[in-house]
Length: 195
Image 1 (cartoon, rainbow, N blue to C red):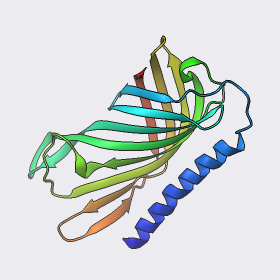
Image 2 (cartoon, rainbow, N blue to C red):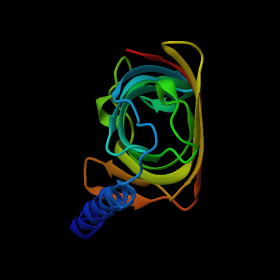
Image 3 (cartoon, rainbow, N blue to C red):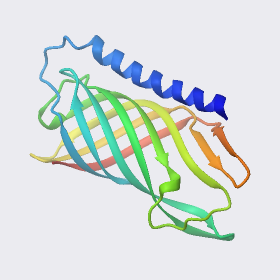
């Protein structure tokens, strides 16, 4: 378990290092710059808030906090599908606006993002399961587009391909990390309101 945890720390460190390296390499760009700011978001599977921080003219770091519903958990041994609660998730994303930046950070971008879902901290759901799924984390790269719908509103989309996720389970006997077997297709559609 300790070996897997060290691998996870290296994995997240290399993600952050890669994002910063890409951003630093293009810092001399003189195009219109990314605007820093907060945005409330409502996506297909979540609601949340994000903050985009300008790092260079076309590069930014985006932090997301989201709550998404979890379904299909077996609660107290009952095999019926149940609402598992709202799971908090955090994402850190490095973006490069390849098409330039328009007002409201509208335009196409390439992104590298890591995510962490804290399944044990779910809200409004049953607290006891047969197997405790504590944390899941992953890394994906993809393409996104922000479309300005006025002064404050935006529509956004993102499609990406992610590495198999790492999951940590804690049972009454032991704790263990498990790596998923499949690559993840990441799809995100939604609307946002710039605060």
